[in-house]
Image (cartoon, rainbow, N blue to C red; front, side):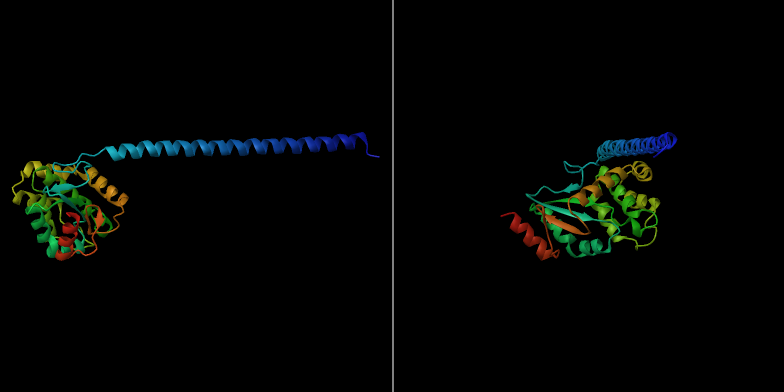
Length: 238
């Protein structure tokens, strides 16, 4: 037969095991609750931050209603151009089809919404894509966006380097008649960098994965030749 002392020892061991198990469960649930609180707080914080971030930008003069591109012309068909000032293919597109775009605008057949995205910062040691896009916003503020854009593509730097300096960007703007002090302050302060960020984020959300991307009334244009663009505009205008 088991002695009373043995029974008491056995009961004590059981009680200790139960107590340890209870403490373990309590610690586990406390940890789960803490993690849940952190996750919820993180989601709320991210939501608030992203909402604020999305709203904290000022579009330059001449922007569309969404503030994500600069409007040129007023034709019935909309051509959306998504280009990066560091993109060699964008420079080539401008050389081949830029005059066709200009003609469609001047003839009143189309309006252009130019979205200067910053996709290629990784190919610059100074975030040139962002700096040049923001500088273009400064040029738009002074009414010289188109002229400034043309100059940037004419003087496009090679990938992998620093790109044009702020001083060089300011010289380009001043050469186009922009006020050197006002334009220079805008460029040096990076006044339109938040706008550039918004333009780039909106392009990504719209499914733009590379540059140049051309859309005519919201539809991607695969044939980016002068003939292809004219045909897409003509089809959209019917």
